[in-house]
Image (cartoon, rainbow, N blue to C red; front, side, top):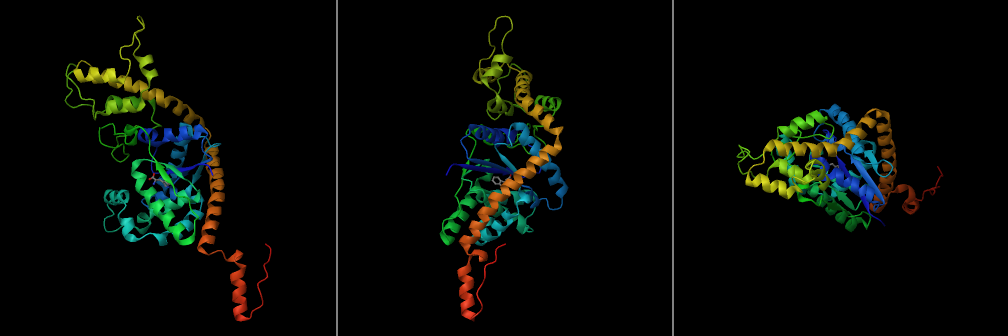
Length: 376
Ligand code: TRP
């Protein structure tokens, strides 16, 4: 059997540059490599209810935003099935049986969930639904027989939990489920892009994000007011590039062509900087101002976002088409998930309809008339 990919996002906000380098661009590459038999991307709206159950409108608004972000980045619905978790009820059924295979203590040890609990102030009032979302995530992955799950590092505990559930299930009920593995972005810098304020992570709640759907003006404004090296006060001062978000973004986004286009002297044809190392070296020894570097970064980011923006505008003019893609994707996903659910129930022993032997032996025990299988 070939490789099957599944990944997803909670629709709780628009996607930003951190999502782009951390996973979206990789998904598009994997999709276009043609190496994978099936690719699924789940908009995890049900999972999003576990910490937004009082604000379902927010989830519904962001389903469309996330779908638009996917499509505009080049996720192609002809190659990738994009679906809505809530429209595949088989996933809840799977979750229910997997719950038997996980202890409360194990759920409480999940480092990502632990952090989220603190961050959301759940403390001693943790909703059961929230604590158990890693189990439902195992259902998301196994329902599609996915063996490859491209994610950010914060999702590693979910994949580990899934692997444990798969092993327990297969041991108890016979080999039925596929054990997945996580795939992280290769470029270390892309695994966690800092915010424009230099904080460790781009996060909607901190307000330090550049969104894929930001206008060129917004992007420029955000870049020009980015945090840099606080000790680099004068152009002539030596500057620090390590941990400096402007340089981290350049590391993540700049390509050789950007240097060729931007730093070429129109008269002499010479390049002012051939690559990022040269730019960094100048900043470090002093004499290179923040504004100049930021303007270059703005050029790079605008160039990256331009094709994404264009595709987004096209889809924005045809929202019904976006919903059609989601509904058709969900139908396709449902077919696959129900096949897995049937296999799972059979493995557990809960498929009464095809278990004529069981029913007949019970008929015999009571001296009953036998079961006549009726075709329906
Ligand atoms: N937990 C993921 C997030 O917070 C979303 C998600 C749900 C997911 N199901 C998944 C990711 C399955 C990978 C695989 O964004």
